[in-house]
Image (cartoon, rainbow over all chains, first blue to last red; front, top):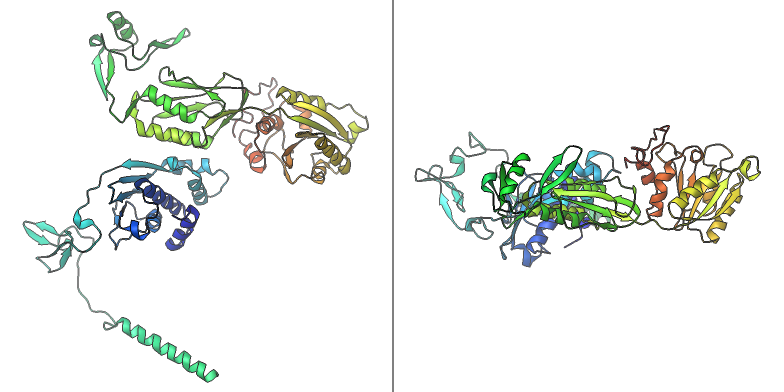
Length: 228
Length: 343
């Protein structure tokens, strides 16, 4: 794996800024991977062995995902909305699973580890680089029950919502009184009052963009010809 | 796991921990030690100590007894120059100086250690001069039985840099003194500085190899510095000329003599105009006039640290500030006072 500084710089650039959460996230990922025995998680032979659960949607989550290479669309990144600064690292091959928690103590100790740095954020950033893992994290050995339908790979199952006809993949349906429903057709949904609409430029396709690009190139070539 | 039993039913069981007895002004210590088998005669004594119930311990695989925990913690905390006996009393282990020297405490690691729940370590102030055998720190796990993982995490935190508590021996320096000031050089007044500085150096086990007097002249002071270096001195103390008067040229002279690092000004009173500088590896300490008037100044805070091998630069001089104000008590009780203890 690349060195900490390189990973931190890359992760911060991908995330949009450098912050204490990035430092914690990069270190959390390094520790998590080390514990489950993956030294190059983004390499092709290791990437399919790894699943990471992040329990927060904060800067730290982006850093964990960046360093480990896990992605939502690959089903290797699982977001559990717990509001806890923690991530669980699963090695699918060996069955090793560790949950790494960022300690609240680390926040209290920032001024002790970086008394020479002014400003809350800068002080935390410097301190989180200096603290040993034992101060920054607690680790739990945990068990994770992974359903086949949670794993990377092709869709395992498709069913149809008996109310709206929507196809639901990988056992995300809800069964109420023996009837299969998609979540939007139940009470357990993040939106309400769906109402279908039409929208401007409804017939746009990527090809129209390609056409515009070719037109642009043609104009440039024309200019060059006339310059000579 | 702990099981509570009535003391009357305890005959034949082994005590799970030391039981402390306190007789005000007379005795404080274990009346019974861990592992003692309770007999009929003990029941009354235990009841007098307020013990109507006792614990029986049945440790789970991931649990440790407070005594075992104290050993794990002590092993993490103890750095170089520390000795301790794996014989906890009332769950506590004391860490003792294995030699005369300067107590060093990794205060960040100590703070992080103490943030782990259910463990504690208390130390003397770092930078205290301690004697062989002196108790410098003590640790304990607070509950009778606790999980092994937090104990091991606390021990790892403490052991990050080879132990949060250590005692460093002071090197025996070959010191050279440069006493500056035309008034002394020309014999207008008698020098009082050399005896004061020599006493402090000798008191810490160093030798004074020579004293050179110089007027307020950059070149002559620089020459005095170079002569000490040529004679093999590995520590230089310079007095006077540290202030802001036009005759105060010691700082310039130190640079002229080849100092590549000069840190002027310490956050201490007395001692604001103190200076540290380095020519190669050799430290030069510029002692302002307060060193003559006050029994204890910033020099007494810095000199033992220098002799322990610590490099004193801008940060170290600045961090003295908290606690760096001497109360100037009529009967000075240093080192048993707050001066220099806030670092």
